[in-house]
Amino acid sequence: MIALTDKAAVKVKDLITQEGNDQLMLRVAVRPGGCSGFSYEMFFDTDQAGDDLITDYSGVKVVVDPSSAQLLTGATLDYNDGLQGAGFAIDNPNAQKTCGCGQSFS
Image (cartoon, helix red, strand yellow):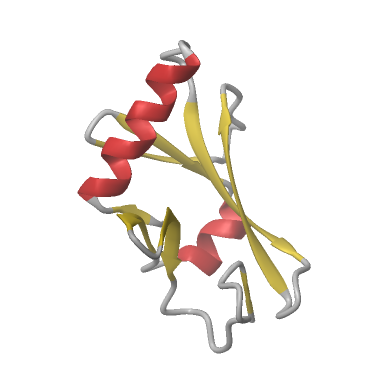
């Protein structure tokens, strides 16, 4: 299952507040595709399947389907807000190769 840094949890919580729906959860998934074989997806969701894995980080519910969880074990979601650009980044120890944009891996 993927972990959130404190900075990522704060940013996700801020985004959920802006959406105005406290029922939203952050869904993190791995899908086939991208230039390296798999790509990450992150979006807000209110639905959960019976086999979804759910973890709470500082009040942020993170939902991952079982197939994605296998590829995200030990991964960390961080948020950077610096001069080089702001955004979320996933550090995944399971990735053997990543593309230049950082959005896909194999």
